[in-house]
Length: 474
Image (tube, rainbow, N blue to C red; front, side, top):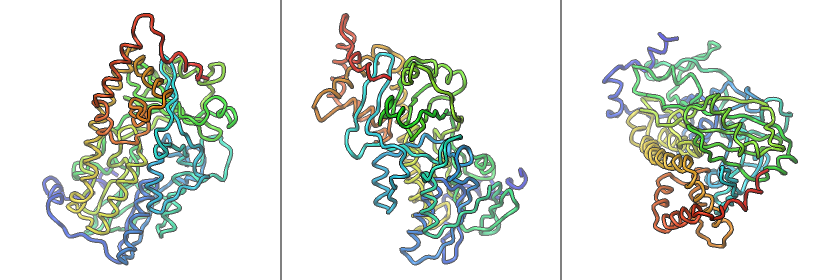
């Protein structure tokens, strides 16, 4: 395999980079074949958009989606290692593209976050209808779940792509190399085919990226970190009783933990932990925290039905394209910690538009696809600063009191502008760019409100604003 992959893109050194500045004139024509490696949201949406764009100019393309998994299966055979949160704003954008998510794909609609800290608990209601969130399964449910007629989010998008004309190849791609002016895709079962364009949408957990990114190609895969996802079975009635239609978020003073959330889904609850290389020690400490245990009856955390330690993208690939090759979704870039599905939508559409209307050379992708990736990367750098500030707040008890008091006061009042609540909502959901979130944190009204609440919540003898909301804990 090493020798075979060494022949991938055999242009070498300076010649490999030349494609970024010299127009090779590669374009798609009638009968051109496109290989999409990975049939998750990015791969399926790319195929859908590509065939839509091609139809507008009467261009006949053949699209093969290589995906070994079946998203109609339960457990690991259909799992896509994701918390499964879709924002209302993304649903609205998809609707404008003709992608209407049916009700049986959504496991539960949520209109609030419940924020848990050691100083108290407060519920944040959605700032507007466009900022609600929905929980979905990327496969057909966790291990040991009952078979259902529910269609997974990934399965639904894949179905849309096939209805547009894409063909699913349930094969594992394990090699790719240049053959003259084509890209040859080879599979573990011996199958091989040549294509005018290869689109890599395998996600960050595939070993294929390790094979693709080598010394003879300018493509460099993103930096990754480890997360933790698990499922608890509680039953719909019990979940409604103890968690309701709310996503429960934890901001705790635990080193390396940026964010943790409980997400109700049908008969199950998904736990998602994000941070710096989540490991067994960090998981154990979180599971032992009072704030997490109090979310369950009698403070007893139920056994895990299944769990995984997937990797997530925390940077943008350098460079996520070459002649006749482009990386989309989190194979190339994604939003830091949030809204990965939204980033998959944006990158897949931009890459498809470039391939149809501009061409498939490295120069074409550099001019018309790379600017989007770069803008996401720049916003993520701002996001890292936002999370660094959030980490400082999590580590200091007096600042946690101020956040809780300011949020609780806003939620109890009638004021339309709830500055702290809106900032927290957008950090949790990814509904706004990090640049916009940072801009709101330096607004004079927000700063003044935070300073006031710092003083009021920590004044000797003062009553904590969150004490009245602590009863919301299960």
